[in-house]
Amino acid sequence: MTPLTQRERTKIPRQKMPEQDPVVRRGNFNEVALGFTEELMLAEANRCLQCERPHCVEGCPVGVLIPQFIRALREGDIVGAVAAMKVKNSLPAICGRVCPQETQCEARCVLAKKGEPVAIGRLERYVGDYELAMRTCPLERKPSTGKKVAVVGTGPAGLTCAVDVAREGHDVVMFESLHAPGGVLIYGIPEFRLPKSVVQAEIDYAVECLGIQIHTDHVIGRTLTLTELLAEYDAVFLGTGAGLPSFMRIPGINYNGVMSANEFLTRVNLMKGYLFPEYDTPVKVGKKVAVIGAGNVAMDAARCALRLQTLQGKGGEVHIVYRRSRDEVPARAEEVHHAEEEGVIFDFLTNPVEILGDEKGNVVGMRCIRMELGEPDASGRRSPVPVPGSEFEMEVDMVIFALGTSPNPLVFVDAEGLQRTKHGTVVVKDEETGRTTMPRVWAGGDVVTGAATVVSAMGAGKRAAADINRFLAGQGTDW
Image (tube, rainbow, N blue to C red; front, side, top):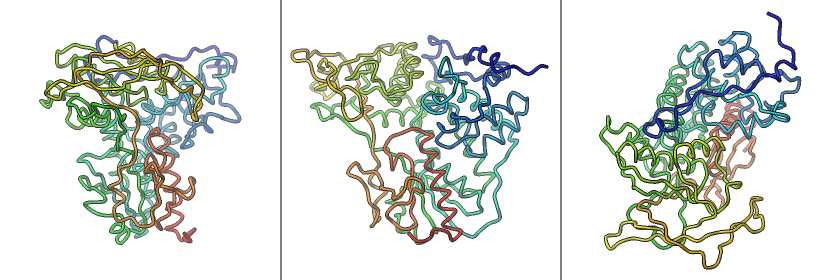
């Protein structure tokens, strides 16, 4: 078969991934995106121009060898694609589903200058799913060094760090505060975006290959302290995330029916609300739900609420209430599109000023005010300004706040010398190493940056692991 010319490759349209019908999927928690078939994968892989200077790699926080894995795919070498992928990324089935490729690797694709970029994330998911099913390239561990490393937190930063450290032959023990490993991948992301089975399979694969131990129900700061870990382990990595929610300081936030998106999503995910009615632990949801905020977590909470309403036969409405306009929405465009398709109502330029309750302490409404956009703030977005005299009442019986998070301070008990910012995040001396101000303690992910993306946390875990490996090899031991 004659190879395609570069011009012919640019003429191939970006392949659309099959999805569940919106009307059907709002009544289930099954995965929305169904994945590429082999035919779609090959067509998409053939769009890649194999640039001499691949800017797409520069846009990837973990430096995935993108041209190499795509070239292997289109040559029919799926095992070679897996091998190329896993040089840098040990969790491709996860990253292919939840990474914001449109602002990272795909944003740097040369095809994006005049059209649509190569669907790198969808190809990554294809590779990851194949590897989970076939297990062709198991992770390899070097001979044991006798060194012991504690990793606190089993989310994306912790998992990535643990894998890269264990591959060097060090003994790794992970500590998870909840009863199931996976961190935010398990308790924070809905089943319809990232199935629990995928996360568990990725974790199991790493544990089996590398001998990593995972201790659940261990709350660092209570069960063990950081100082106690340092007495037993040669190095400690903190990947505890940012699970402490933020609320607006307005009247009525203590009424029944007000909660954080973290609490709501954790209930849905860990209480298996997504399996209702087969699994009889229904999660309470209102008939008229307001989700405050418009980030990815807000979209997740709104779409979960909509599904629970349908499954529980309540019907009703779910609103996203956001003080800025559509143009300033921070969530992924794909998530916003899916939410709109499913029936989530968006109330832009709207801000709550009070939550209303009845004599029993239950939410019955929300007083809001209309907003208009003023001058840009420090983030570059135009600041919302209240419109005088525009207050109105919205009938709701459940309010979910999705306004960001900060690290839980409990982990820092008995951690003298560990410097933190005024926001509660851990200070690292160097982002390229993840070293904290406490000797032999590294940190990365949301506990350092505040709430961010899965792949950025993975990048931090990878950089910290590289420095931990150097440190345990006797290099750079001068803290």
